[in-house]
Image (cartoon, rainbow, N blue to C red; front, side, top):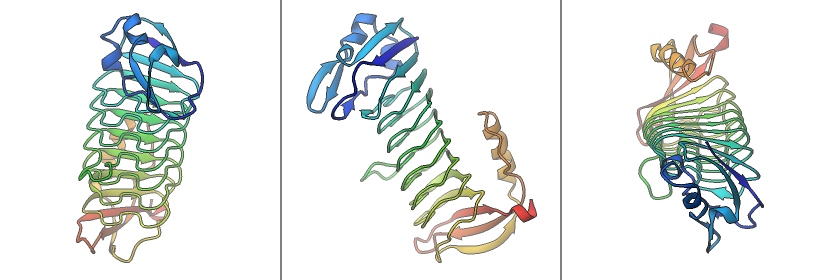
Length: 268
């Protein structure tokens, strides 16, 4: 395992996109220490900000106050990253495989435009989780993002496939312009969930303030939910997803063919 410990908190964002297992596993200890990272517009060596321990491996552990450290795991294809503490923006962006786990909180754009792999954040996350960057037509295309706490604005923005699960309350515009995939909200969301969604599914275990452009289609007991619960169980997530749901379709102003399923505990 390669273990990186932050020596000092950066005063401005530290761009550390080289810190990914598929990059570090092919390098010697000295080569890892000499990799370039950017503190603002200035280029530094990795060992100017991190103590580097361990042997070349596809397992990477980072420790310290990483709130301003961005792009960790960018484009990673395999291996594992564990962050002990909080981490900054763009964690696992463009990820293609492997697994990332964070003991604390994460910033905006977790798993942005990822194509495969799994990201687990024990704490809270910022906005645009699994989303597409401004000007991009698609967000995440596959993979899993599990957030234990709350999440910010526009999670699942233009997501095409994959799964996002959030344990805490989600802010406005969850599933904005969704094109596919599944968004699971254990504690519900604020306003405008599913706005302009084309396809995909939002499952909420709490009531949502529905927009008038979603049409109720009555109670349902969707088979896919039971299958999906087994999929989550394989990742160690045990959820009470079985039971009856109130189903809404929309967003009719697009027009879209998405669906929002709200769990009805009285019928479970």
